[in-house]
Image (tube, rainbow, N blue to C red; front, side, top):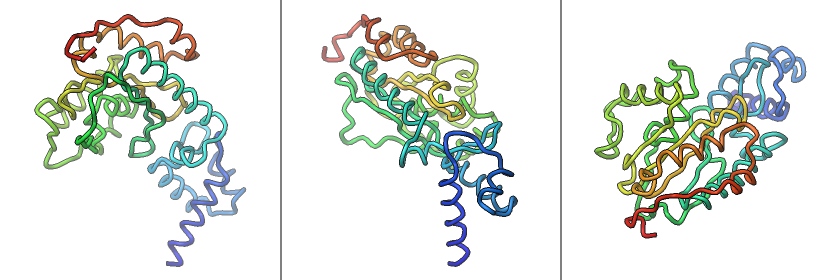
Amino acid sequence: MHVVSQALQRGLAILETLDDRSVGVRELARRLGIDKGALSRTLALLAREGWAVRDAGGYRLGPRAHALGATGGSREAVARAARIAHVVSGLTGASVFVMQLAGVRPLLAATTPGPDAPSADGWDPPTALWATAGGIALLAQLPPDEVDPFVAEDPWPRFSAASPEGPDEVRDLVAAVRSGAAAREVAWSHPAAACIAVPWPSLEPGVPSVVALTGNAPLVTANDAALEDLLRRVVRPGTTPEELAGDGLALVRPATTGS
């Protein structure tokens, strides 16, 4: 228990010292009076779990730490994402999600439910990151070798007849998004739903982020190009909620969506 307590205290001390500006391991070790080797191991674990982010300058607070008490640029990014999600949902009637990858797990940064999205009553979303378009768009922001742990499932789960049949199909979908395509899925995890997702790298630099739009399949598929274009405008650096609201959006609304 004494060793566990020391490790916990070291991890908390590191998080208290980090902020939104990167700091190198050597400087962090000096500030904390911690052996550099032990510090490096703890930082690597914190980064793997999403509590810290490693970049060219060293380490800074990660999305899981921000979720507990966002500071500085992270608070501003999440607030902006929430405003934009609200605008996009209002324009489309779909549900809009903004997600970030916190180490090995997705973190929902903002969400706005839409009236034209299928009901989630009695539906449990899959836990596998690759089983949603948003998850595919998150994985596309990782180096190829870091995708493998996310698809190392044996036996392979099938959430529906439409969901990916195996890890090779997931890798192909990830590669397509990495090359510039949007991530799409129809009835992967909900029989009536379709989703379009695009990476949002400028939301919080160094943290894989996406914006995803989910609605009834007929609505999404009938307006595929217009919805992708809207999401592309969302992730364009500098785009404001006011600009998106001012542009408006004319959608084809199939009778089967109930509108």
